[in-house]
Image 1: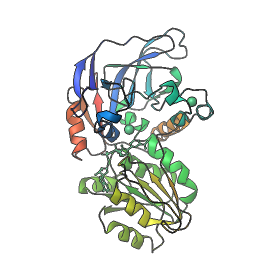
Image 2 (image 1 turned 90 degrees about the vertical axis):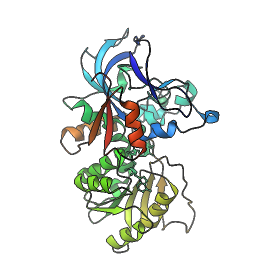
Image 3 (image 1 turned 30 degrees about the vertical axis):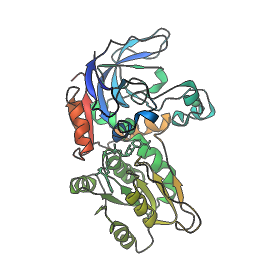
Image 4 (image 1 turned 180 degrees about the horizontal axis):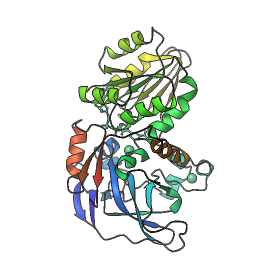
Length: 346
Ligand code: NAD
Ligand code: ZN
Ligand code: ZN
């Protein structure tokens, strides 16, 4: 089968032919319908050889939906042809965090060498993919596969970050979304669906700000040195009860710190690599800073349910598997509006 692989440190990913995978005991083979292109892959492909954490070659793709093609020995409860989404941040299934469905925070995944598809294990940018356990599969139940695939990360990750801040996002409050790309444009819709908060979007690109307004941001502000002042002004000096930074570089964290309200929350979701100093007096009183990773199994089911209700619609641009390297180039250049989605069997 064909697969998109990152093969050589520093080189672009390539479409190659690899052996067809066969499901072992307990595994499920999916024929991949759609695979989402995440900015995290670009970060992964920028890491130096010395501390590259995964074996190469690596089949990319940590957002995946497909149809059940074959069941390994002992797998029950799924039927061939069923359309499913893959829960990516897979854990051991047995530790205290996994028991709560928070496999993204599995206590034993590292020790057991369990890695998400596309982030260590072979991912969804291939004609077929293996899933290690049927519990990682959530039925699409009528959702369009292309529109649904980004929900497994670009939807789930902001959903998890926003859920924690919900008690702060009461009527009259303000939520700031920094970076309105794949994750950010879904975050705006989730905030509108789940809270009465005023949503202020920040980005460096006019195209992205246009999309932000289109999907429900009340205000869209250019992300520059004046952005924090503009947000303060919009909030009558109070600031934002919740700030979601989907970039995580020095200037965006500075903005996040400058716009947070007393007792506000700052979620650092973007893996831009910068840090935010936290200490008495460095932030308004009682601001909480957290750096969430992906989301739980039950939250994925919730995000899909929300999409079924019509509250969230992801903007997508589709590419064939052969065009996938180009999709990464365009994402790197900031030229994807919404989420790029690869159709490995399209
Ligand atoms: P994306 O490229 O689709 O979106 C990033 C957006 O940020 C773009 O619209 C870009 O114009 C904007 N941007 C860049 N610099 C900016 C600045 N200085 N101010 C404001 N906006 C700016 O990327 P994505 O796939 O949505 O991912 C967003 C980030 O989240 C990435 O860092 C990615 O690695 C990370 N991520 C983290 C998790 C997690 O679990 N923590 C999960 C998925 C992705
Ligand atoms: Zn991702
Ligand atoms: Zn676990």
